Length: 511
Image 1 (cartoon, one colour):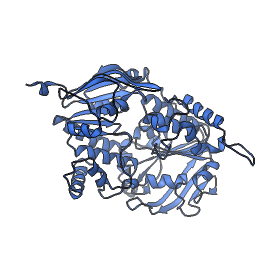
Image 2 (spheres, rainbow, N blue to C red; image 1 turned 30 degrees about the vertical axis):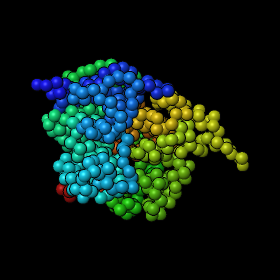
Image 3 (spheres, one colour; image 1 turned 90 degrees about the vertical axis):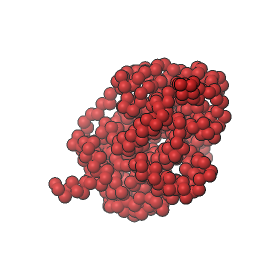
Image 4 (tube, rainbow, N blue to C red; image 1 turned 90 degrees about the horizontal axis):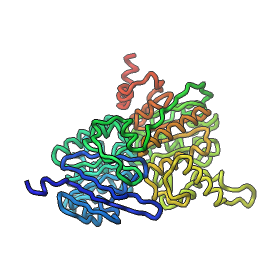
């Protein structure tokens, strides 16, 4: 055998990357063999995404060497990375919202291909791997989960030698995760190397054959995850095991949010119409909504938050008051706060500081009283600093821009900002998307604390384990219809999985 065939597919030696306020990667070395599925594990802000961007040519290292198939390379940009055979699925998607799925995929492929050919290949690849996509649908009409499918299919169409996946299953259902794992194992069998970033320890132990652990930008361990437990991986990653959630039995109060027979066509050409949706949430309970991405979650969340005021009068009531036509600010004044699924651009303005981003939903706490009311910069910075401290957000202070944070740290900040408002009703979408196990445990504990203090919560998540761990009752949304509620203690993963296909009607008929 020659050196190229025996050399690692990827060999990183002593890579360092410094930013003004942090050393993101500190003398990091990593080796990935051909056909290996290699996990990179670490808490939020550990330097994982920075390292992946260095491999992909999106970030230039300050020191160190990179070898690919035995040859030293200096990858100056993503185009050079793709030419080598490196493809990457980012945690924060790189898609043009005004273009269609096929057009977005076409941009990252060989220009000799026609758009019609890409459209056909996209449809075929989506069917082959069970990743449902409509090639002619505009990206702006897609949910987060559907956008993730676009990124994955785009990468698969490049036939990569090295595929980097940054939190690829964060908004996929268990069934979709298993299909994706089948795809990745098949790719690995062909010799494709996979670098896999995830905070889901069960996934890493099931899928990966090697694991490098980062903490504070440094490599703290290299293990075979198949021989580790979740507890031992947690200790390597965060230095401890995450605390157990305490779910106390409490007496629920009155209905505070009610949706009554809501039917609504989507305002997007490829959206999902809501059909006779009825839902109620009481003070002191968490109601979970499960479902495959793209089944009406976006439309339901829009009318609950006030982003859409197209719901018919009296179809949504808050503390008995008709709020169907009220905007988000009016609903916040009534006690309802909201955490959207999309962090950058919706939950936070990327170019604004964390302090400035508090004004998106907490302006009433920060503006003075009287005819000459003004925003207090000092109070704004203090509020941001308090959220950073309470949720252990790794950031360069209240003046740090939202886009400078890792995905998990920005998620902690947005959730903390809304929890700090002391809402009476909180609607949360994908609360722990891309968040490490320690931070996820903290967010879930804080949501449970809100519930114990009498807040009514709706949690929309595609992580069934999360819903089972936190919620008192569950619904499933499928094709714009909402299932009856079921007490979490009476539900099973199998039953909820069946309901995701809309089979609760069949079940009721046989009851």
